[in-house]
Each structure stands twice: as structure tokens, then as C-alpha cells.
Amino acid sequence: MKINPYLNFNGNCREAFEFYAKALGCKVSFMQTYGDSPMANDSSPEMRDKVVHTFLEVNGTVLMGSDCPPDYYEQPQGISITLQVDNAAEAERVFNALAPNGTVTMALEKTFWAERFGMLKDQFGISWMVNYDGGASA
Image (cartoon, rainbow, N blue to C red; front, side):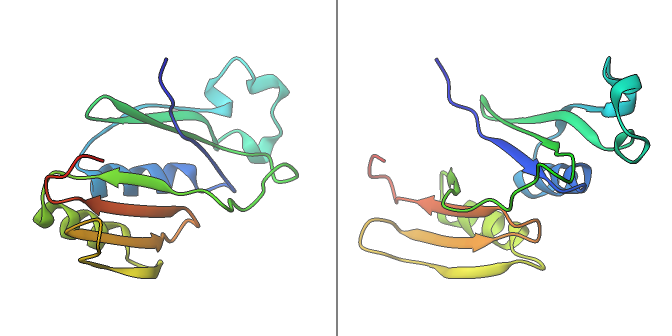
């Protein structure tokens, strides 16, 4: 069994996943629009170029997402995507790559549990935590 986060967006899923792929140093593995899916004829014209399903992979972990029809979208609350990185430099790189046009809620810094830990909400409203524990087990 695996647990994979699935993110819902309000029409900007393509932009978000292209941003995440660049920030995380990977590629979008799959992306399909409503218009290119078997649901094309059942989709409203304004949804046809929106993403029905996409995913990217980072070291065996899959992050998935889609655009919600406007009446179904809810701003995410109470959840964060946590990135456990291998060194302080990678923590700095990833944190800084996700931060543009977002809000840093806790600067990336040394804590009692980690060499580097920081939190931010990215420009798409998704909360992230970046952690490098300095070699201690998670």
C-alpha cells in the first residue's frame, strides 16, 4: 500500500504541476485534459482544456492532481506536503524554488528536530514543509 497526495486546483493545475516539476527537479509523467479524456462529451466547454488528471514522480513517490469544476473547488486547509530531503543545500534549493509568489509561514532554519526545517504556502495555495533532519531518522 502507498499513500499518494492528490491536489485539487481551481483551473491552474497545469501551471502548478509544471512549477512543481521544475522546483522538485523532475518531470510531469502524465497529464490529460477533460477534452482529451473519455469524459470530453460530458465536460462543459470551459473545462475542456483543464486538467482531469496529472502526476509527477519524485524518488518513487507520486504527486497527483486535477482541476475541479468551479462548483466543487475548496481551498485546501489543514494539510501540508512534506518533503524530506537528503542535505541542507537541497533543503535550501527546494524551499527557495517553491517560495516565489507564495507566503513563508516559517523560515527555513535549524530547529531542535532538524538541521533545516521550513514551511510555506506556495503561489497555488498548497502548504509545504521542507525538512532535513541532519541524518537522524524521521
